[in-house]
Length: 245
Image (cartoon, rainbow, N blue to C red; front, side, top):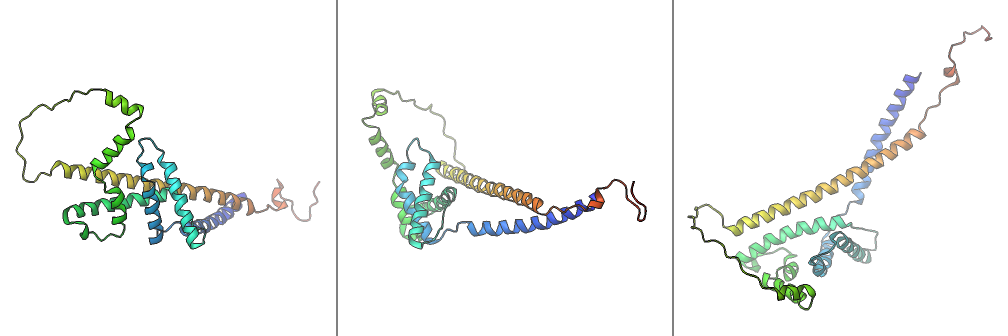
């Protein structure tokens, strides 16, 4: 009887667990945030407004992205009147993908002009992110002026270290210039970061689904316990017509 009970209970648990997994996947797909055009514009405006905070030498990016997510969520709820919500890692991942697209269009704009770029977010992002290196360096020095660190740097005299002259090697016809190699390396690093963020988000979803499934199986096992008849609890069977001593 114990073996039969175990088989019946396992069958019930497997059937109910399959239904639970399907329900969890359906609920997860419903709660997953979808980036509409309006939501993307809100992300662009909020992130560009907070660009000086992200450019600080010492800052907590996680806290900043949580602030970005809160502001984008507030704007969407104010306009749509729903309980829509976007998470910090979703904003971070979306912005990384947009930065990759922006850099490609920025290179195209350098070669062919800004009129050749038709990406709708390029102009808005280029006004903030398209500043030259000299402008960024001038702003950095202006921030350092009057501070203890700036005075310490200005008071020191640095002896320049000149590179040792070497014989110039003939350039091969198919070799890439150093700038293209650096750009290629930066793009590869950006792709690795994007893949890592996607993998991290996927692992978090898996862990959450496994925890929900474990809780559901525990509840089902407590609710679907089959009672054992009293006849099965006796050690020796009693033949009919023979009274027990």
